[in-house]
Image (cartoon, rainbow, N blue to C red):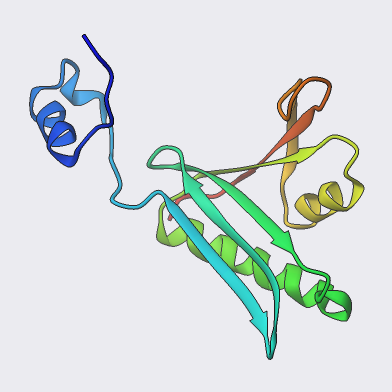
Length: 140
């Protein structure tokens, strides 16, 4: 026995001969969606989504120092696009994590409508905890 990188043919084979074919597994052609928000000659931030299941995804953003006076509008645009993305991809549960103690990050996810779910001890390495946040959508 050996582990190797899977191929598309491997996935098709398992789909055809699955031990539990009625489990409802959905394999998407794309799992990462990355976007850039620019304003004129500079980038305000990048962010994206990573599909975990057919109804759950991670969300992330990284803002630049150029956000400045555009912060409120930037966060509004990000929040609106999150809703559009989740509707278009039938996402019901959107997750995000923030390192414990990162005040600006905590404020940002809460502003976007996420709620704290639980603490993930040592998530970012020994002694570096993160908080899991979640936001629910109707998937439609």
